[in-house]
Length: 466
Image: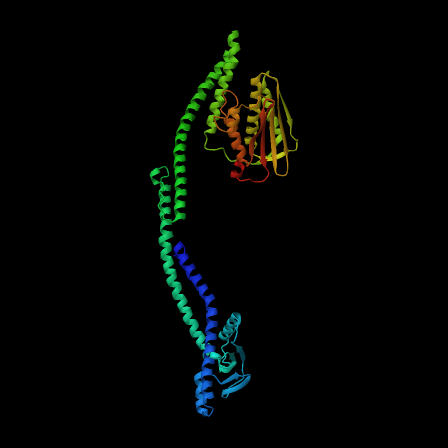
């Protein structure tokens, strides 16, 4: 009950109504006290009129008039003359004097609360204006015993009435909330649970039916979301099936090509000039095909493992990459340069960062070699207060427009003929795993420059992706 929306709404309604009634109670009890005192003044004025009409009334009648008015004495001021009209012994000193001719609301509420808080019987003096302008002022002296009792009786009546109003109002609101809010919300929850049980089943997508505008908007948003999820699941299922088939084909094809690669080693030893001239091209084609198969199998994995961050001396890592690429250059005129502080140490996964730098340098080397012209590849690195950054620059022919548009898209961002674009896609994924960003700074006829930014502070994956 207390955990449900309607139950909490019921309790809050009772609480708020009671708070509102308490705020009303104080002015009400102050008004009740004022009316009580004014009624005593009016009754005292009526009793004084009997005395003024017959000045020879006996003591017993005067006492009866004062008793009916519930006062000890009555003083009238008429024509600037103050006259004691009715009088009886006062059994004590006057405790306080109250003027009801023009009291402020705050004074009335203060005096009422003070009267409720004081249990002792008191004698008070009250001033007021005579009814129907029968004089300038009327003054009475009276006890407070009955006043306090009457105020408590009135307060209890107000309390019970407020409680009854609160309960009745809360019950009606409780029923209204259950009918207008809780039931439609439970309907939406039921639809969500049904959809979650089989999200690929399009029949389970919610159909908006709520009459309330806000709930209908929520149902429409939910329908749109469920429709997108169902479509994505179907697409992923088809891609998964296709990926499984491609992985099997790539695995078998890699084995076949590896065997073919072994045979090409013997072909290169042939003395036939034509064979010796065509053999390197055949070897390069088979090597590219093997690399494509290996990259496809690597990309087909569920995900790259999370980086194991350690302290990495960047100069040593880049040195290993460049030493390996110098051996792969062969007779081509490609030079390498490094501009990395020897003491630069960054926090990264050494193996994954090595793969990224190697991919960028290898792509640059292959691009320059393909032109048949001399070229240079440089790797530089620096750091600031927020991040480390690594720049790989080459003097190659630049990236073609299609490669720039789909640079980090698998199977679409290949820069060289026969390239798959998987290398850059995997590299970008590895850098995102570090919370960093792999980006293309610029490219053109004068060359290409890639930039790796690795933050020194932890960055959420979503922020890094943006």
